[in-house]
Image (cartoon, rainbow, N blue to C red; front, side):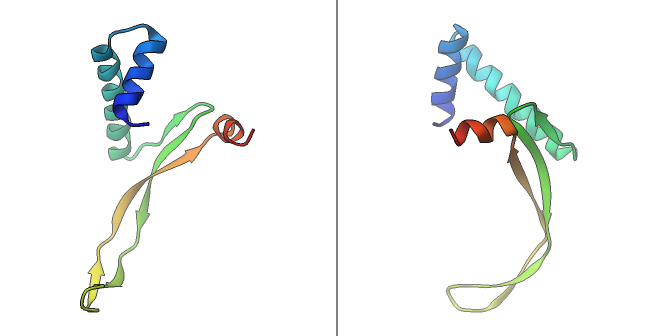
Length: 91
């Protein structure tokens, strides 16, 4: 399922126009992104938690020529599924 499919599903289930459904999805994703950028966790009850994890710098190798490269530290988004979502997947 991609963003267009999600928009369509929301529009049908909520009985709203696709344009409004797309706007709601954009608001939700932008709000989550903003919170994560600000260092906050986002918890959606029974669904899961979005958070940010830090990766340490390390030495990697260029697969083309084998030279050593320094990979800088970085932050990555992490999603941890909630209890209800986990149980729904394992029925």
